Length: 147
Image 1: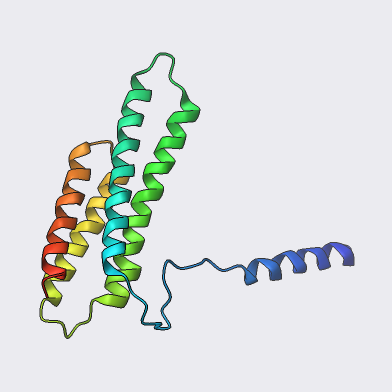
Image 2: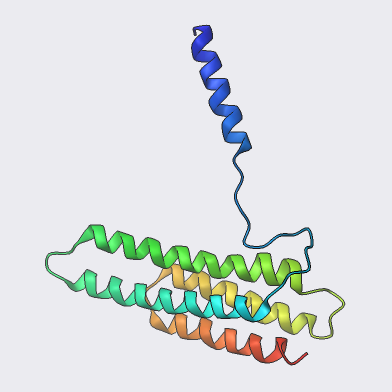
């Protein structure tokens, strides 16, 4: 391999090492938290997941099937389910829920169930999974904000 090719590979490799993903919220800790906003975001993601499921169902029944749009809606549904999982884990489980909290086990239980519901939303177009996610979010709101 020529020296210029090796240098190019090294430049690309070191550039890739410098790229980092931006987190939804910092872990400094900065002390700037908006729990209600995060709950609203989860609710918005659930609505988007539901709409995506409805579009996937409709597009799958259309003749001819528009596979381009179908794939876009599947990707959209999965992205928003991932966002729910990110908020639940990175924001609530990592930063907000502490082992010494009185309702620690209750918080973790409902948050874990939300992770599973989001996963099931990714795996299917069964709208009952979105309803389960919303119900769990309501359960979490009830126990979390009445501390």
